[in-house]
Image 1 (cartoon, rainbow, N blue to C red):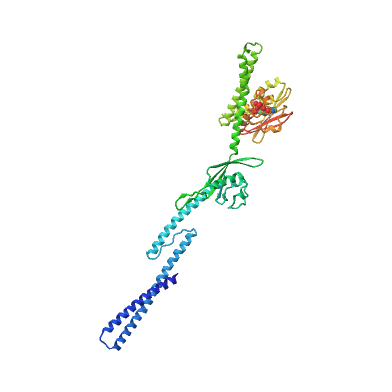
Image 2: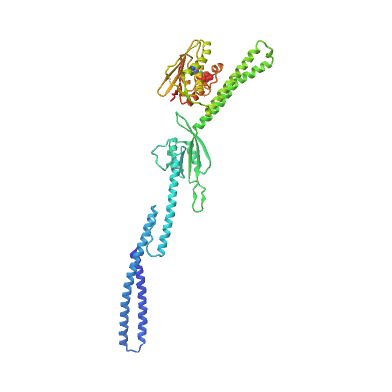
Length: 479
Ligand code: ADP
C-alpha cells in the first residue's frame, strides 16, 4: 500500500518536474539563440544551461521523492490504523482509536468513525442485554414456548416446552419440527400459523397415568421489512405457547360437582317439604291420625336443610380464610371429657360403650378449644352413627415429640379401602342414603380436616369393613 502510493506520487511528481525542466530548457535555449553570438558559443552556453537545469532537476527530484516517501509512510500508517480499527469493529470491539497527527481530512474521518463505533457499541450492548433478558424470561417461564422458522424447523424452545412435548434433552437447534414434536394437534396449529392464520387455539392432553391438559396458542411471526419498515405479508416463522390448564379444569369440575351436589342436597328435603305441605293443604290437615306425623317429617327435612346450610357456610368461611381462630394452650383431657359426655347420651341409646383413656401428664396443645371440640365431636358423632347396637368407642391420646395425637376408634361398619382417601372430600359419603337418613350432611369430615390443617395438624383414617374405624388427628404441642 505504502510502496504503491509512494511510486504513484513520485511518478507524478517527477513527470511534472521533468516537464517543467523541459519547458525551462526550451525557453532558455530560445532566449540564448536570440543573442548575436556565433553558433559555437551559443551551443556551449545552451549545454552549460542544460547541465545546470539537469543538476537542479536531479536535486529537486531527490528532495521531493524523500519528502513524498516520508509523507506516504505517515499517511499509510494512519490508514492502516483505520483499517485495523474497522476490522476490530467488525469483530465486535468498539474501543475508539486515538486521534494523532495533523488536523486533516483523515483526522475528521477518524473522529466520525469513533463516534459511529460508540453509537454502534451502545446499540449492540443494549440489543445484547435485551436479548439476554428476553431469553432468561422465556427460559424461566412455566408456559412452554417454542419458535419455528419458515422452513418448519424448531429454532428455540424452553425447558417447559421440552418437558410437555417430551422432546429429548439432546435435540439440537434447527431440527425439522416434525421430527421433534410428535403431537399432531400442535403440528397442525404450527402449519396453520406458518400459512399466516392468526389467533390459533387448541387443547392437548399429555401423559398416560397422570393426565395433564394444555391450552395451545400458535401465532405467526411477521418480520419487519427494514427497507420500508413495513410488516411483511408472509410469516417468517411461528410461536407456540403451551399453557397448563390442568388445575383450572380440575377446579371447573370441582365447581360443577359442587353445584350439582349442593342442588342434590337441597332437592331431596325440599321435595319432601313441598310434597307433605301440599298433602296437608289437600285435606290431610283434617286427618288427625297422620297430620302430626306429616308435620314432623316437614320439620325433620327443614332441620336437615338448616344443617346443610350451616355446614356449607362454615366450610365457605374456612376456605375463604375467614375462620376466627384464637390460639392458646388447650387441655386435650378437658376437650375429650366434654365431647364424650355429649356423645354418651346418644351412644347409650344404642347400647354403645364409650371409653376415654388420657394420660394424666399429657401436655397441652396449641389450638382453639372451640374448634378442637368441633373436630372431636364430629368424629365421635360419626363413630356413634356408624357403629351398630352394642358396639364400643374408645378415645386415646398420646404425646409425640412435637405434637399430641388423639384417636377415636369404633367397632362399627368400617370404610372400604377405596373410599378411605375420599371421605374427607366435600359431600363424599360411602352410603349417601344411609348418611342422609341419620341426618348426615357429608361435610363433617371435610370441615374437620380443614380445621385440623388450620391448627397446623393432620388427620387420617384406618379402617376395615365390618371391624371398625380409627380416626386420628395430631395437633402441635403448646410451647
Ligand atoms: P356425614 O354427615 O355423612 O357423616 P362426614 O363427612 O362426617 O359426613 O363423613 C363422610 C362419610 O364417611 C360418611 O358418610 C360415612 O360414609 C363415612 N364415615 C365417617 N365416619 C365413619 C365411621 N366412624 N365409620 C364408618 N364410616 C364413616
